[in-house]
Each structure stands twice: as structure tokens, then as C-alpha cells.
Length: 423
Image (tube, rainbow, N blue to C red):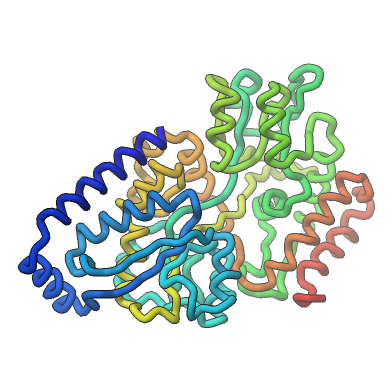
């Protein structure tokens, strides 16, 4: 389906390009020049856009549409190159003067990029961008009250399940799921138990905070408070439960395919493979609630981060770059990205379009999941978070942790999270 949509999109773009080429003359060129001049833009701007390998054809198509809808950009030289959002920060900071004018980056990179002076502060149509995108995506694009990124897609996780093993009602509660007998050799539930991206959702759901309420205080983390210790006890129970497996993406995909798994946590990137494996039994749901030993029912709050587009502070064409970056992330372009790449939109209208989202059950559930998600902190201290969380998960799996020493274990984990970078 995605290939078909992309083909139609690119054919229409090529047709528009051919028509534009056949009908161009000096009079039209002059009109385009006048449009650029009246709008305050350079008539011959040169811009480079970075994006993932998978996005290249789509980006080129969107850029052609941008030129068609913005006559002032007709003479601009816009090229694309391959640098993924995950790698953007490292590549930009190597030498911002030779980096792309516009680049996609993961929102947890924003603090370091802004601190290094690599991001241009958004000054064009800021209020409109804020109004058009969901609030937590705007928060992720903001540093010290100023916007430095254009929200584009959201990224978190949720639960996939086998409908032949669970009903829609049963998958609302992990306690209910784990109480069910699925037969010999079949795991009821799996997740990456030593990966803080997943396990942190249990702490956030219980009210714990990482780097303070707004995620900006590197001296604050209360995962070792009373509720946090109970969450630690619950995660230990999961690790020692024979009905639960510790699985990364490769293992969970194989288990679902073999019919040996009831449910697991992962993201939209595995939707196509799981839909193929499960067929009519393909099910998706938000992360289920669970019950702590004190009787508290907790709904996990998953970490969410966003892919943003940023403008390089070193660009020679900031006004032109902002115009293009805004177009790359507007409602129309986000819809194209959803249709072609199965990406979850941050645009409010698209996120609320149930008819559109229903064409991708995984994205539809993700859109519900992020309503209660916790935005991943972007301060540099986040680099200290992952290793202590991984160590805690591994110790639980190895049964090196007990409920008797859970408080001391959690204290050590938090101490590691709050230690100085590089220590």
C-alpha cells in the first residue's frame, strides 16, 4: 500500500515538473523573481536538506510541491542528502558550517544542539506552528521559552497482541493477562526488561519524575521513593515470572511468528512485520495497567520523543530555510509522511482524524498512547540515565536483586543517574 501511494505521489510530482518546464519563459521567470523580491526572499537561494535514506524520494516529492505552491522559491536550488534523525546531532556538531541548512533530528538532541549554537531560533509563524501541533511536541521543540524545532512525527511504544490469545478487554490489564494460561511453550508477555526506554514507563505511571517535574533539573530523580521501590518490586516480579520473557525486537518478532507469544511492547517500526505474521489475529492496544503490592493501579506513561526539523544557525538563507522547514512539517506534508512512511503525525487535525488514522491501527493506538506519555528529557544529563536503568534490569533478570534490598538497589540506581557526566 505504501509503495502504491508513493508511486502515485511521485508520478504526479513528475507531471507537475514537466508541465512547469514546458511552460516556462522569461515572463514567468520574471514573475517568480518579483514574487521572491516582494516576499523578501533571495531568488536564487541554495539549500540542503538532510533526511533518512528511506525518506529521500518522499522528500524530493514534497520539495517539488513546495516550489509549486511557493512561486518565490521557483529558482531555488534545493538538494537532499542522507543523514538520519538519530545521527543528525553528531554530524551537525562536527562542523555546523558544512552541515545542511535544514535537518531532521530526534528531540532529545535539542538541548545539546541549541547549547552549541547550532540551531536557528524560529521567528517566522511561530504562533501558527504552536497552534497547529500537539502540546507535548511543542514542549519538545522548545528550549528556555524559545522554539528551535518544527514538530514532525512522534515516537513512542505501545502493545501488540495476538487476538487468538487475548480479548480486547483482557489486554487492558497486565494482571489479567499474566493470570491466563496460554498453554505450554507460550509466553504471556514480553518486553525489553533491561531497557530504560521501556521500564521507565512503569515509574512515570506511578508518579515518579526524572530530572524534576519539567525534566530540566539534572539534580532531581525520585525513582527511589516509596512508589518507585514498589515499581522496582513489580519489575522484579516480571523478571522472575516464567510467563514473561525478556525480548528485544528480533526475539519478539520471531516469537509472534512462531505463535509462542501473547503480547509484547514495541513501536510502529514493527507494525508491518507483525501484521504479516499475525494476519487476522493482529491486535494493538495501549500499554496495560498493573497493580502494585499496596493495591495502587498504575497506568504506564511511556517515554515519547519527537522527530523535529531544525534550521542550521550557520545557514546563509535563514528566511528561506524557515519557509521550507515549515512546509516540510505542515499538515499536508505530515499527511504524506503518514501515508508513505506510516509515521505518527504531530499536527492536531491529523492526530484527531480518526478516519485517517484508522487506516493504520498501529499509528492510531500510538496517537492514543502519547496523550499520557512523558516527554523524554533533552538535557545532557539524560546520557547518564540509560546505563543505570540497564544495570538494574539485568540485575533483576539475574536475580541479583531481592525485595529485601530493593531500596538500596534503587538508591544506587538513582545515584548513578544523577552522577556527573563522564564520572
